[in-house]
Each structure stands twice: as structure tokens, then as C-alpha cells.
Amino acid sequence: MIRFYLSVLLLFVVSCSNVVASRVKAHKKSNTEVIKCPTMEEFQPIADSILAEGVRLYGYEKAAWMTSDSVRTHCKNLDDIGVSVVYEEGNVFTCIFSDEKEENVVFCGKGKLDALKRELQWSNEVRPLSGVEKEALNAKKKCIQKLSESYGDSIFNMPSANGSLNIDIIKRNEGYRLYILQGTALMGIIPYGNDYIVDYDNNFNITSFKRCHKGFLALPVESGKKVESSMHSHTPDNPYMSVTDVCTSLLYGRDLYGIQTFVVLSTYFTNGFMIQFSTEDMKINGFDVDFLKKVYGK
Image (cartoon, rainbow, N blue to C red; front, side, top):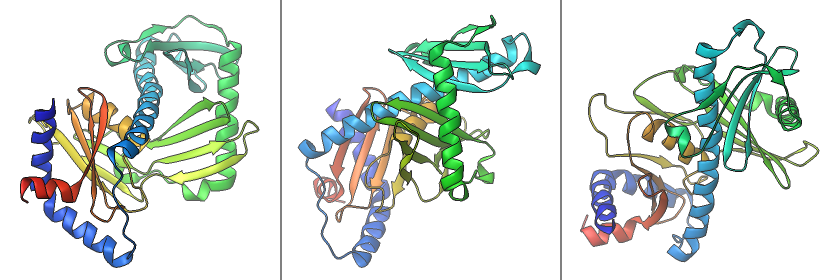
């Protein structure tokens, strides 16, 4: 495994050394403060937290994806579909579609995280909404309403993505967290960016609004060719791989295109910091770019 990491890192250090140099040089011009890369002891808890939340978000998105595909084929009455929501119980992710009156479930899909990569358990039997489902639908409506009132002018669906904004609401002890990810119907790209994280307290007051990436990147994937790894860079205001990066890499990069390694180049740190996400062993590692260049003589 160590040999695998080193070979991948060598490829990226060689191919991206010019990018590293130009980005770090620009950062130094705009910021004279020396910001050291984190040590592995400092970085690993951060990486583990990002990975855990990113995989959790992936469960919400994957359940929504697969249920949305199944409902078109198996729902008994497509004319009576209202709204949808995803919720989590234990390690099972469930996506339901209500009727227009939001009284009954007309379609349901669910699965454990590992199983969602392969299959979905679905049901088209009409039944009343459970208490958990009513709460999840209510939370989604209130979160979106508050977001629209406070930040509606700050959120845009990117026309070039040819898709819609995907919204996930995750219940937390201190309230709720809303994620927005840019979806796409285009093949041959991984849609990074135009993503947001919004936190709420238990009364649905917004306590934090963050745009994860400044722009939108449709990272191309070459058709008909096996792609071993993928890379994009972050501006200094986004120092680490984001939770949404992890989710998008799994949804598109791994599940659609079979890519196993994803790299983010952070320019927040003076020397540059390379973050590697391996879907083979589900681990995030970080490396000082200057150190790598010295090791490989590049």
C-alpha cells in the first residue's frame, strides 16, 4: 500500500509541479505570512472527520439517486408524486416520495451504505407517512424556506452543468446541516464546486453559511480510457479537501468512472499541501508539496 501511495504521488508531483509553483507563488505575493503545513498528527483528525461526514453525505445522495431512478419505473401512479426526502436510521439510508398532499408515502427506497453501491430495496406500496418521515419533510421545508429568505440571491444553479441543485438535510445534535451540491446530466465529467454548507439551530435559525468552492469545475474524464486518479486545486480560502469533494468523488469518480484516487492541491499553506483520498482503502492522507519535490528531485 505504501508503494502504491508513493507511485501515485510521484505521478502527481511530476505532472503538477508547475501548477504547484505558480499557485504557491501567487499566494506568497498576496500573503506574506508563512503558514506551515500541518503535521500528520495535526492533519489526521481533520481528515478523519471530513471523510466520515463525506461518506455520510454520499449515503444521502446515493439513496436519492437510486430511488429517483427506480420511482420512474416502479411507481404505481407517477401523477400523484409530491416531494421527496432522505433520512437516516442507524446505518440505513431511506428516500421516500410522498403524494401531493404529503399524507402518504407512494414510493420508498432504502439500503445500507455498502449495499447502496450495488442494489436498492424499494417498495411502491402506499402507506401513511411515519412520524420520522413527517419530521424529515418538515425540516427540509423549513430549512429551504429560511435559506431562500436569507441567502436566496447568493445561490445559483450553473447552466453549464446541465443539471439541478441537490439538497440534503442532515439532523445533528445541535440542529441541522443543509448541503447543496451541483448535479449534472452530462457524461464524462466530475462536477466539483458550486456547493454550499448551511448550519441551523434546532429552531431553524441559520447559524452559518459557507460556499465550499468559489466556482464550478467540470473536471473531464476521458472516455474509453481507464483513469487511475483525478486532481483539482483549491484557492487559499479552502485549505482542505471538503466534505462535498469526498461525496462527489465517490458518486461520480468512483461509482460512474471507476477512479480510485483523488487529489486536492491546497494553496492555503505557504509550501503547498497535497491531500489524497483513496477509495480503495477509504482513507485521506496529506503531504507537504515541498517535501515531496525534495524527495523526488522535482
